[in-house]
Amino acid sequence: MLKPNHARLKTRLGSPVVQLAIGLALSVGLMCVPARHASKLKGIAIDTVSPALCAVASVRESARRVTGYLQAYINTARRLSNTKNKLIELEAENKRLSVELERLEAQARSEPGDVAGEPLLQAISVPARVLGRAARGYLERRHLLDAGSDCGIDSGALVLDAPAARLDQGANSSLRAGSLVLSGGRVWGKTVEVGPFTTSVRTVTEQGYRDVVRLASRPVQGHRIRWGPEAILEGTGERFARIRRVETTTAVSVGDMVYSAAAKGITSEPLFYGRIIRVRRPVGASHWELWMEPAVGANEPETVAVMCVELNPLRLAERP
Amino acid sequence: MCVYAIAVVESSCADALCIGHVGPDLMALMAVMWVLWNPSPRAFVAAGFIGLASDLFSPGRLGTATATFLVMGYLLVRLKGKFPVQKVVWQIPAVSIAVGLSAATLGLACWLFGETSTELDTLLVRAAGVGIYTGGMALPCAMTLSWITKPTPFAV
Image (cartoon, rainbow over all chains, first blue to last red; front, side):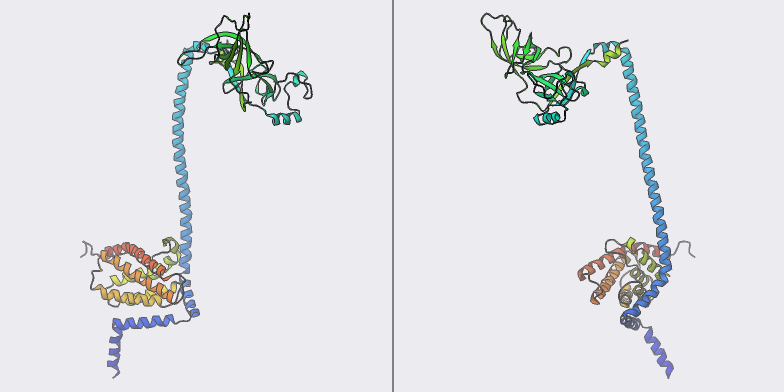
């Protein structure tokens, strides 16, 4: 009696639908398991895989170490390759420069006369700042306004004809008295007193200024400068400088250019002073009375260049 | 053994396998591949056991993955005869859809049980991502299984 029922039950249980229903019922039963029991079950499951997890973690750590080592090795190899390329480039550059040097040396040996064509004197431009009133006051307070100290001049001494402008360079920059001071390539004045750190400048229009100048007619487009006579430029303390010693037999007109004659043979281009602004011929006089407007304005420039003259080292090297 | 290996891989290499918030469901992949490659009409029972393992090794309520994998496996068994899922070309979309649906069901269950604070639409989008990602991972598995089970020309 029991056997057929058992067989029927077995057949029913073998049906996929019944198996699905049993599985779903068990799943619902699992969902109803209290959280603490579920946690225990999960803990047991995690414990079973923890040795494998440890093994995987150690393998990953080793792999990371190996990867880091390989990365470092690759980076080093890349750097080495770059350095090798750089070395090859530098060797090629070195070779090229050696060839160039040899060629220039050979050229210098074959053309010894070229050095003789070099000028004997050359102009060196020393940049300097023009000290303002506040800067001069500061230096005076610290007894650093040293121009003239070599001659026994003190800062409290009475000044009769002292130049007003002062530069922040002195003997430390190899400046000497009597050098032309240029502003924007035009003559602004001359150095008068050179101290260790500062230099006083007498501007073109200041009283006591004197220089040899050359007159030139107004330039015509495309033509070279047509030089006129040499003359003496004098500062009078007024707005314009006076030019003397130009004979009335020479043609002079307003607008003619005035260049420094002192820089002749030193600079390739003549140094510009200004323009003739007034021409007078006193009755019976044998010389013109000329007045020049300086090219540098009345305001003090911020920076200037002091033109120093020195021997050309190429010519000195040529000396036996 | 395979379940154990997959549990270890999922637990230890999840960070390496994830793309953003989406990672492959290797347990579901195994369950689907088992059902697809096993000709028995009771293959879904094994999928249920894999679901139970998934429940044990993942956070969340017990039984949800078991039920989901059982139903998914049963439906796959029923549909297997209607589509040529033995071909690799059909297996990839089958795995993608099945795993995507199971991930969506599990996400929905989590959301219903209040186990997650993520929005439902985000969970569904992630489930779709899981399905696509796992489908992509199924390709080498399906090719390997196809290559293993294919009779060689030297077979007697």
